[in-house]
Amino acid sequence: MTEQHDKDRAFFGRRKGKGLRQGQAGRIAEALPALRLPEGPIQDLKALFPVPVEAIRLEIGFGGGEHLLARMRESPRIGFIGIEPFVNGMAKFLAAIEGEGLRNIRLWDGDAALLLPQLPEGSIDAVDLLYPDPWPKRRQRKRRFVSERTLALLGRVLRPGGRFRFASDIDDYVGWTLARLLASPDFDWVDETADDWRRPYPGWVRTRYEAKAVKAGRVPSYLTARRRAS
Image (cartoon, rainbow, N blue to C red):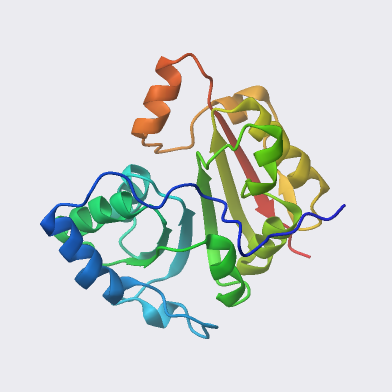
């Protein structure tokens, strides 16, 4: 059965935690609208960045922003799209990019599955989905981000040869994702040995979530797939 996305059923959980401080609320009200991607179909994605960019990468659910910030710093000529519906994480990230003066970023604070159809075909160089909500209970699994439909959406926006990375400490979700990647007509799984998917990605920055997972005894996995050329 083909998996569907119900627009009334988001892939993420809560949107807000503890109350925002005044400065954080101000950034959400003032800085976020200036960096948020526009609603509706986008024709020229690179033109939306305030600085010239050579390629565009997408991170879905950046959390506290540790990984995304590191990638932005090391690749100032790459444009990044950061997606994070959780308001507190977005506020923290806005403070970080403001403090460092980073400009190679555009943001989306809604559902990634609703943004992807609006992006130009083949416009993204790479996608990172790192520690998404695992929705571990059987009745919740339909809310997992990875599905036949979302992989098809990612396949449409990724350029041929573009890469997709998925990291998680939940073995069931890793197996779930791998099964769908192997069945996808758009992707090839490129890991060849156990070390390939047990070893962190080059230049990996450990997030606070991963540190907690490792401390709890869970073993992370790091899958990599490539968009097929045809």
